[in-house]
Amino acid sequence: MTKMFSYINKFNIRMLILFAALCFVAPVFIRFEYFQLVSLFLCVSLILIIYLNKNIEKKDINYVLAVCLTAFSIRFVIIIIMSLFPTLEISSDAGTYEAGARNIINEWNSGNLIFKGSKTHFFYYVYNAVAYELFGFHSTVVKLFNSFLGILAGVNIYIFTNKLFSVPTAKKATFLTLFFPSLVYWQTMNLKEALIVFLVSAIIKNMLNLWSRPNIKTLSICFVYISFLIVTRNYAGIIFGFFVLVYFLGISKYSLKWKTVVVLVTLLLIGFITYKSGMGVLGWNIIKRFDLEYIDNMRKVNYKGSAEVLLNVSMDTPLGLIKFFPVALVYFIFSPFPWHISSINLISLSAIENIIWDILFVLFFFKGVKLFYKKDKYFCVLLFMILSVFIFIYTITMGNMGLAFRMRSQLLPIFFIFISIGIDTIYLKWKSRLNIHGNYRNK
Image (cartoon, rainbow, N blue to C red; front, side):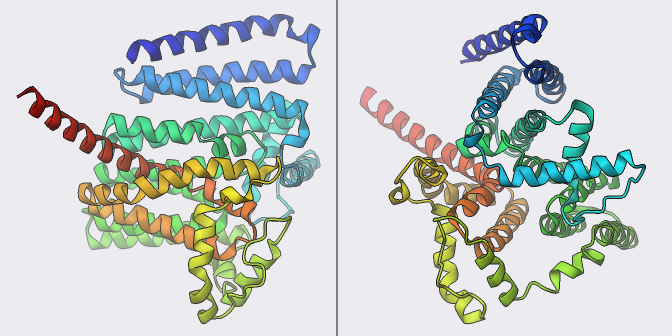
């Protein structure tokens, strides 16, 4: 197995050398945009190799390097294909981000550093603006950076799962995170999903670091990522901020005085960020309007296309929510269903992928939760609660299967941690039984 990964790495390195050689002649044959993209791909790949060598143990580097470079190369090829066939990607949101980035750059060129557009999720617009300012208005560059963030998310999941469980479990979780089709698809477009997945994985990894090093420095690193998540997807950052703070207070050995100082400083910082982002102090402007009627209207606004979910259902009362939430939850977790395969479109293709997802979830997810709970009760409950809160929010606000499919992809790396633990549990049980039967036959 090690030889195979070594061979894959050699192949990947040779391909990088070939790309480097092509860079010298590429401008003669192809547009400058692609020459620039190939050059950037090489630079980012080199950064990835250096990063992995510093953060992954030598005995595991062959596997991690092989899957990361392969996954990054696949994403790179998909980006090129999508640039040649633009109808393959979702352009509406990408167009919004590009327009917002242009407005920001115009403000910068006018000497104004204040963002005048929508402040609630402004960071992804700034992220686009920086990329366009540095490399020109080529959306392929942003897509390449998004792909890189997707790979880093896979590395974060590997480090987390390896520290808490084992190398085999970490390998499975990383493989699923890097190669699951929907994650690959969303991360090769100019959408904020890649950034959110990376930030979530980074926060989870640093939450584990808090366990071994419950100090202010580690907590500060955690809250840097949380701050970026707040200005990318506000409620997600606020939820993570709450759970991380509770987790830190539960495990740290600081005195009550120091814990009080940490809580106050954290609340002040988050309050300042949310206030400056137009969300009010600690996101109060958002929290106070989240009654059932508002949420139900938000869900109905999301009825688009031909894949609406629970179109004639109302969840604007407690009774309505209790009655229809289980059905909505089934749609969020399992849809699109196989019977939605009708023509070649996003819903049909995602329904094919969902057959694999449904099998993984049903067979391995709860097994993984059970073993995780036995291994680390406190962290398992915390991670499961975070996952449950996001599932609840996404379930009651989704309006169609396409949106549910896209929102669920942001949580997949957390699901894959539990699923990989479940796969390893069942595999070890089967292996043990086979060994017992084998020994019995030999006797």
